[in-house]
Amino acid sequence: MKRTLVGVLFALAALGGLAAQDKSAYPFVDMGKAQALIDVLTKENETLTNEALRLRKEAADLTAQVIATQKGSTDLVPLWNAVRARYSELAAIDADLADKGLKAKSTDATVKTLALLKRLTGRIDELGLRAVDLGREVERRLSQASVDEARVARNTDDIILLQAALARTKAQQGRLDAVIGELANLTTQAEAALK
Image (cartoon, rainbow, N blue to C red; front, side):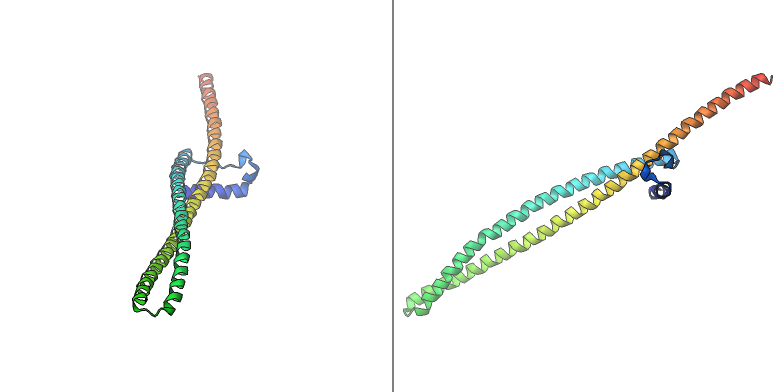
């Protein structure tokens, strides 16, 4: 129902030159249906506006998480670089070691350092992937919020057209009531004159 009535209004608007805001260009409408459609569109706008606000808040919260995640990853990089530099020094020292006790100590430190580098690399990668995933969620929510807001704008335009058409129809109703009232008076006078 609502798309049909609004579609008719748009077709008439295109043909009648609504851009000029000529009140006579607005079509007459069934007042009950027009008001019902205005009510539906208004309620839909309330729902869509609340949804868009919720999505934008979620996007802002997720953006904060993206920033924190990226910072966590960025904070680990200097530590990874420092461990990697010490590991290179350890490897250089290990290459010249002849003492079995020192070699065993160096080997143990090498194993532990490689395990630490692996854990740091894994965490940096994990945080990077999490930031990307969160970024996608931000974009998805912002995109849906934009769709909802565009729908609100279209609904608002429809409401404005319907209100203008409704006002024109109410004015027509007023003229009709006045003419009927005058006809009733004339009928009374005519009936009296015919007696």
